[in-house]
Image 1 (cartoon, rainbow, N blue to C red):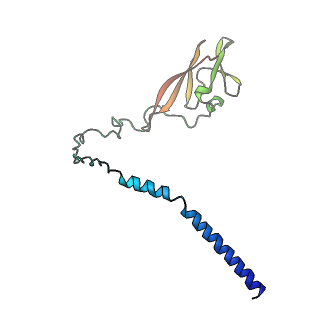
Image 2 (image 1 turned 90 degrees about the horizontal axis):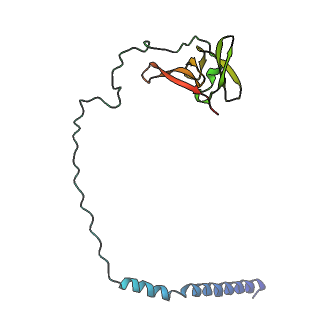
Image 3 (image 1 turned 120 degrees about the vertical axis):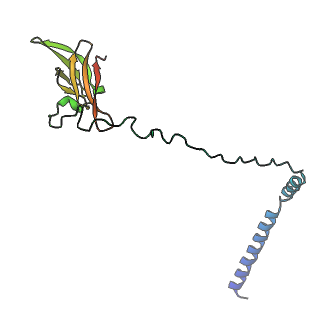
Length: 175
């Protein structure tokens, strides 16, 4: 026999011995598993609870069909969209209208020449003098009064039905 054929036969015999050892190793240890399976099968079966009775569906008669839908306004809109207060789109915007009202802080008041000014501090730390009639905040807020304890503002807020209403607000002194 040639040298190459012998080496192939040697390799084949080694491979055959290794594979038989691997198969022999897999078959060991199965005895305890088989005993456990037989033990479980020998146990008496448990009682299975019956499925619950399914109740028949009861139909529901909707009797409030003649009432107002909850998705409609509770009262018809008596006024047209042009009635009532409206924002003035032609009015030039003032500097303090870019800040939300809740970010403005009253820093105090000052009287100059018989006129009382309110001092408002913005979120960037600057202090501005304001008078009644000036606009502040993002909802067309107009200053209506200045006192020692705060600045009164009247905002123009959308009512959700195409109109607007006036809402009082205040900017107080914060520490």
